[in-house]
Image: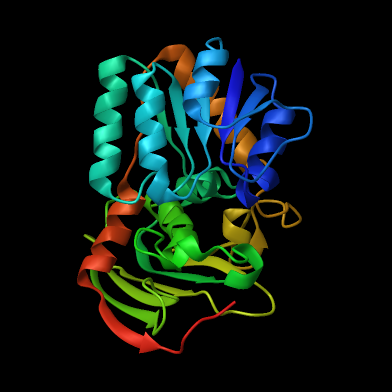
Length: 309
């Protein structure tokens, strides 16, 4: 199937374009972007022009930041196009509920993606935890915003989510591997004096079985980047590291520890999108986004030092 990529920024160049290039299901037929281009692919100034000149392209993948994404998604769905959403799927829960209703009304597919759920160790972690009693779970998601979001001021604006933009990846894994739902009970959000969104956060959660669950996020972390989830159970300590790419129990590897972070995640997403379109319907799981929304609603805000690039 031909597909158009909307928004050619860092995530599109690093993940979407390579995944499409190696996919047996997709052909990158067009792009729409104010700044970025893909060599050898026709670029269009806006969706109206794309749809008018290429009515044969029935599928779009939106790689824009969350705030402007809603209008593009509405336009594409209303034009009868299938739509894939980069994470988080919108700036608010209400936006995404509206998009799902619109997709169903036009009988097209909407796919709200969570790429970290496709990490190499996640499925095995889910299977392992299903048969164990959880005692505690801790998320440690600490990275350097200057390395992963260089100069991207949108992440500090309302709707940009700040540290939760990467932090929601951890929550997408947690809500996938736990067999029961959890919810936020308290949060502390460190917000730079000159910004609108958190640069660091600490979250605590309710677990129906009484397990202690917490998450620590920090966007100021230099050196080795940390994307780790540790689960203490009645049968030992399970660790997911590398953003879900590596899985071990009590120090023994259950998944190849040499698998690079992000390896295979986006190819698996695009394979699922192709299957979703073929069978019809939508895949819109908002569990990770609900946890972030609750953290922002409950969070006690603490002033942090100003952040500048």
